Image (cartoon, rainbow, N blue to C red):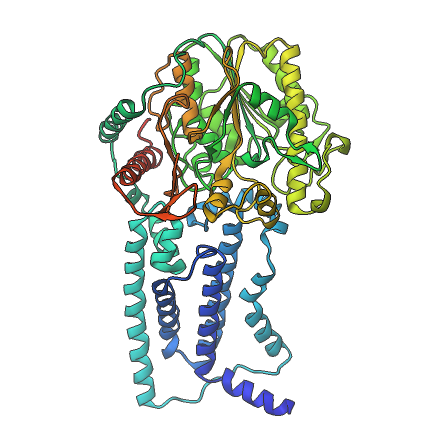
Length: 620
């Protein structure tokens, strides 16, 4: 029986059927990829599947002219490479709800950040990307099958195979060009690009764009960009200029503290678990001052992108690229605005300067004091590889006391960094919640790390008060990005204890970050309209009566009722755009109308201006 099976396997392996079987496996893997990424909660588009099949068949059709053994070996190599590509794209999609771009190759040095999240990213179904390859190699290594040279082919057969190869080349070139053009139709939204052009068409288009980045730039000169920018801002001022508060220019001379909290999502605010508040200190601070209940991150991205959006009021490009590739650019950043007013400027973070290239970035911004890990005296406690929040905050306040007043400082915390195991925390009693059934789960670890970050924040506020820096300072705090993946089952279970979350609710929860602000004299104010990191710089400009230069955000205290992400998502007070428009209250799809078209038009104009500024360095 075994001998018969070996004969059959060898017969298949050394025939053209072997390549056909590999192609079928790749088609199934591609469908698996779509169902677990861009189509996770929707049916597969028949056009996407059809075009994916054409890509794979044409690619293998090109091999028809090759000798059988070489063809089979090359087919196996293609199978391995495409399987690896789908697997890595799948991993990264779970990490950031996005697929990889070739432009991110310069970010390989920051791979530790993604590697630390592998327990969250690895899923049982992902073995299917490699199961067929594993079986084939086991059979080859045990000599149950052997790849043999083919016998000399007949001339007629050779001509037919040549024709198949030539035809396949033309089909592959045609569908690649067509896919690239379709991807360019939605150049900011990768999900849409993939659905229109397939994952293969997206990567071909992405490679083309990486070679010729100018395709992404609409405005080639500063004058062209400025003309459109001025027109856009004039429309915004007319429609959204009115403010909730009449306090323009009243904060001159006050200190400014911007605090960016690692992975702090909004849903943890004012929540309890087993009878204890998850974030008691942050709750107290935000509830006493100004709460922004709908602040959104600007992209499915990194800490560095959050910093970039906050400081420049522009959209990030590829994940981290603004800091790793375009760090020499000139921007109308927050530090520049306040230096003109005689402020002392500083940036603080408990990591070394090479990470996300921060040392070079903030030197280029001409920051007075760049306080990174090697600038702090006490480095006795590291958490997740970074200076613990507690040590960071205590030493930050001491440094602020020494600076010439007034000052503006940007402090970035890291103890609640992804992984969330609080490795390095010397006293676990500083985590004072019981996560119960979630203990030692990714979700439970997240809640514990957030609780520790809140503990450290409480110390920070106490230290500011003791140093007599609290009352006379504006303090802005917010989460940099999500901590949990969009469809984390335990998080959804917890959210559903309050209300039944729709898919739209879940998508908004993924991009909504915790945010609050202390303005001396303003108490217990809750603002529910959508705001974003782009709005922080214009808000400070409003409070201090400063010219904020080029800023695509608007004053958070004014009445603009929508925000955008750099991947073509839009959030308004009532609607959410993600390829289609959805009613936020019901989660149901709604018809596009004049008002919604206006939001989409504004988004496109903002993204075109921002991308042109960053890629073209138009503010130099």
